[in-house]
Length: 160
Image (cartoon, rainbow, N blue to C red; front, side, top):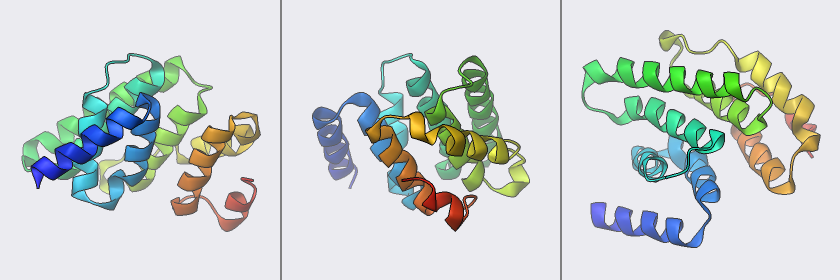
């Protein structure tokens, strides 16, 4: 199983750009633990240090808490990843994709963790700045919005 998983990951990485591979893997990460592990592997193998790559790496660190078997490490994964993501967004507050990453993390993290304070702000930022984005990024945002727990049907309809 791990061999097949590694081959699929290698195939994806070979035929896609780094950012596109991160986006596609991230979009599927919450569907299963195998997809989560695939995203973590792809993120960890990225060599870039730009804000988006670092943001996806921070999300991977947070998601690692979901699949780790070491209960004592879950809290440290979330705390370190959230701190890293917040720092990146503070340095790049107008980057819509970073806001999308944080929104998706906060929507999917258990409420007990308490990392949910930016959902309304990020959602408003995404909706207000959607029209200024590239076609590829608009499509990515639309795909996210379709499965979003915090966006209403009316808000989803505004994303054309």
